[in-house]
Length: 237
Length: 317
Image (cartoon, rainbow over all chains, first blue to last red; front, side, top):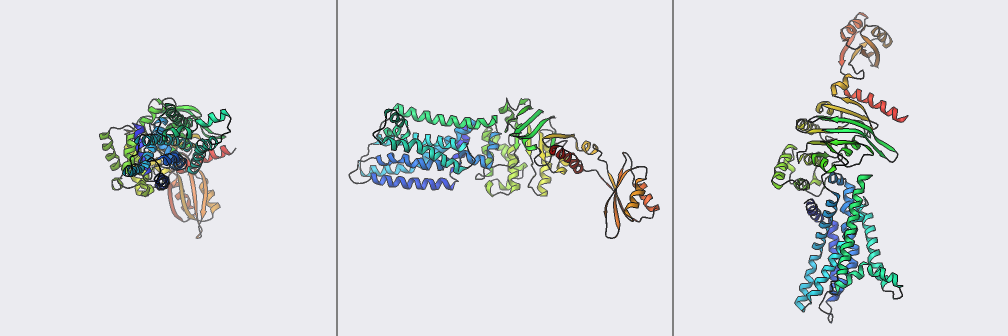
C-alpha cells in the first residue's frame, strides 16, 4: 500500500533528524522528573503524576516533531515529485500520520522502564497503567493530526511549529486553567469539559469511557480530513 | 500520444501560458525551447498534473489531465526542474521508495532499479546518501527515478543543466536512445541540445508558441540563410558599395574593422545563390587584398534570438 511505503519512509527519516533526537531527549528527561515524584516514599505504586502531566509535555514536544512533515516537502520541492506520482493526497496524509504515530510510540517506549522499576519495588496495578498509555496514545494521535494540519499550510517549519503549539495550548492548557475556576457559567463549563484535558483524565485514572474514546477518534479524523482537503485544494488553484 | 489544446495558465495578473496547442506523436522526442520565464516549465507542470490549467486541456496517452489525472501520472515519468530529492536517503533507498509508490512488485522493482542505476551511471554511488552527491549525480538520480517504471511518456525539465560536458553528451545520447520506445518532451534553453537530440522543436516565448518544426525547418524558415564573411583590407564604404552591386547579393554589412585596417564584411546572399566566387573575384579585381572568406551557416541561435526578441517587444507593448 502506498500509505505504508510513505509511513515507513517517514519513520526512518525521523531517525536521521537531529531535531527528533533532541526532542526525544528533552521529553524523556522531563518524564523522568515527573516519574521521580511518583517514586517518592508514601506515594501509591502508580504513574499518576507522570500521566497527568505528560499531556502538557506533548503540547510542546509534538509540534517540534510534526513541524517538518509537510512544510519540509513544500520548502524543498519534493512535494512536486510526490504529487506527480500516482499518489492520492489521502495516501500521503495517512502515511505521514502513521509514520509519526509510530515514531511517537518509539518515543514512549523507554518509559516502559518506569513500569519495570515500579514492579521491582512494589505491586503496581497494571490496569491504570495500561489505560494511561492508551490515553497518551490517543492524545498523541490527536496532537499529531493537528501538527500535520498546520504543517500542510506553510513552507516554514517554524510557523508550523508555533501555530500547532498555539492551537494545542488553546485546546489543552487553557481549558484546564479555566476548568479550575469554580465560578464558570454552565455553558462554558460544558465547553471546557469537551476539551482535551478533561477527556483524557479518565484514562489516567484507569477508566476507559467510550465517549472519550470516540472524542479522540473523531477529532483526529477531522484534522486528518482537513489536511487532505488542504492538499487537494491545490489542484483547484 | 500527447494532445494539447489551448492550454492556459494565469497566476493572479500574470498570463504565464497563453493558449498553447501542439501535438506529439508516439516515439517522438520534442524539445521545448524558450528563454527563461517563457512558460516552458509551467506548461510541463500542467501536463504532469502538478498545476491545474486555468483553461484549455490536454490528453496524455489518451487520458485527460484534469479528469483522469491518476492514469496520466501512471504512464508518466517526470524530472522536475530543480530535481527535488530526499537528501537524507541513499540512492538505492530512494529508488526503492519511488518504486513502492508506483506499486511495482518487488522482483520487478529490483530488476528495474538495477537497470536504471546502470543506465544512468549510478553504479558507484548506489549506496551513497543523496545529500552527499554532486549536482550531476543528483540529476542522474532524478533521471533514474523518472525512468524507473518504464513510462510511456517522459517529461524532462532542463535535464542537462548543471552537468559537465561529458555528462551532457552522455545524457543526450541516453535521451536519444530512449526515443522510439518512449515519447519524450524535454525543455531547454540550450540550443545545441535541440539540434543534437530532438526530432521536433517547439519554441515558446512570452507564454505563446512562436514556432514549431524540426531543427532544419526552423533554420530554413525566417530568412535564416547562410552568410558569407570576408576579411579584406581597404576602405569600408568602398567595399560595401562594390559588394552590394553584385547580382547574387542581397545586402552587405561591415561587421568590424581591425587595427591593421582589415575590414570584416558580412554578405547576405539572395535565396539560392552561392556568392563566394563572385565576391572573391570582385574584391580581387577591385584591388582589396583578401585575407579570409568563409560561409557562415545559419544557426538555430540566431533564429531563436530573432523569434524570441520579437515576442519580448510584443509583450512590452
